[in-house]
Length: 49
Figure 1 (cartoon, rainbow, N blue to C red):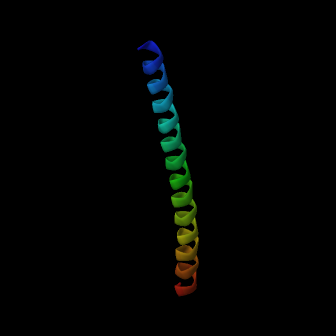
Figure 2: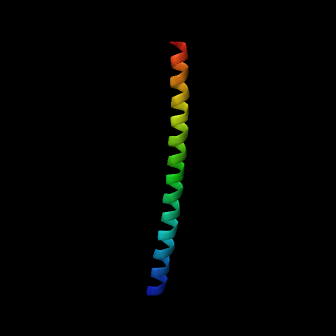
Figure 3: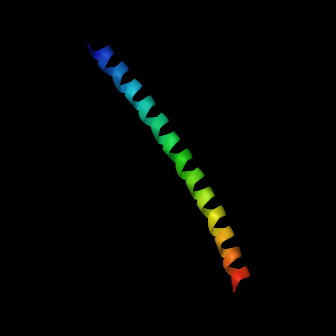
């Protein structure tokens, strides 16, 4: 039973790590896209001024 619990803990840690990495990737993608839109918005604002 101890080996099964250890295996489940390891599997859970791998899944959690994978989810964390996916979340980091999504966050980085969002931040990059947001920065791009912000730059474009600022440029349009300057043109209109």
